[in-house]
Image (cartoon, rainbow, N blue to C red; front, side):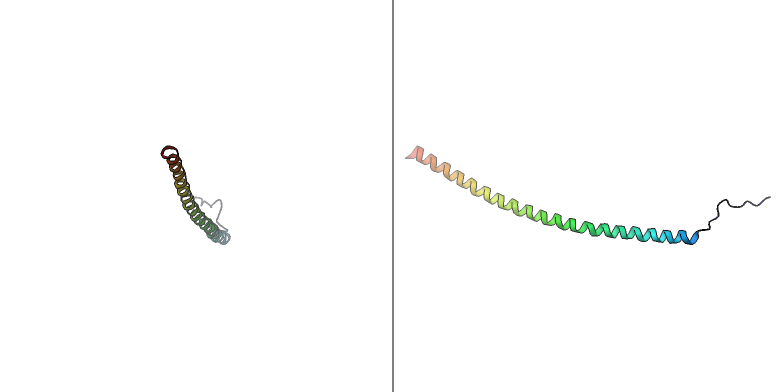
Length: 84
């Protein structure tokens, strides 16, 4: 039998290993930078949520004041029209 030689022997083991390690390090750096970029976004969302809560509280307070003022005016009007 004739011995069969490999068509493409693996002759680049060291560069292949170096590129694999470089790819792993690069992927880790990308993931870390994405996490750092996401942090200010979550802080911004928290601040925006707190602002929305405060605005809603002030709006409800103002709405209650306007409602009570409106009812006071209506009652005063009906009182003056029907009872005086």
